[in-house]
Image (cartoon, rainbow, N blue to C red; front, side, top):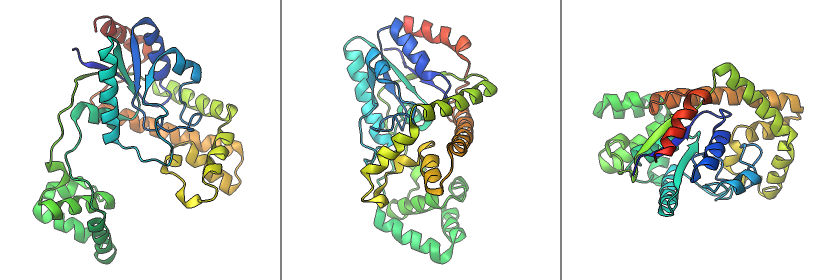
Length: 300
């Protein structure tokens, strides 16, 4: 089998529209690689494909968990590989589509074989951090592996996790290697030039409010009104976070729009950098990339 095609790009780059277009011309089923589209009820703020679009082309890994449920990269890889097997078994072409780069990286590279976290050991290390400071913990790592200490980038969570694993196993997380991927992948990067992308982002955010983002957030909040402390972390996604904060502060809609637009622009730039540095993907506009993708699907 040829490598599975993957359509990547930052938010608002036009991935969904292009994927739907090519799916209508080929026997394609879409496998979403978006960390937020898995959640039911988070529709407008995630720019989820419409019901008509979902009915026009078979989609996988959309609306599969509740917002309060945990869903991580390991579950994604398992679900995505199962979907690919199902699609190819009926003679169709799986097209992975998404902007969550580390999901795609895990598909392509394999999952880290690092042991699961031990919360009790981590709590002990967090207590040490409070008492002795970050430099003390980094010193413990540096004494064994200076390069590993540098990779921590003074991130407390990474330091605590690294020491938790090391104290239990004598190895740091990066020394465990990765599982073997079930498939090979061909990556296609999509993005217009930055000024155009920023215009698309601004229009998308405005459209979210026109389509009822405020009402969507209010409806979601009703679910956890009796237990606000259990509000799911999914609501910290860009768009939902700013609306929630705006509601609490009494901000007007224009202020929320400005904040979401800025946060989304910054996120899109990070996505482009991540795709380039971590997956070695150079994004092109649709006019350049589309013929290449179509030719690949034609010969799949």
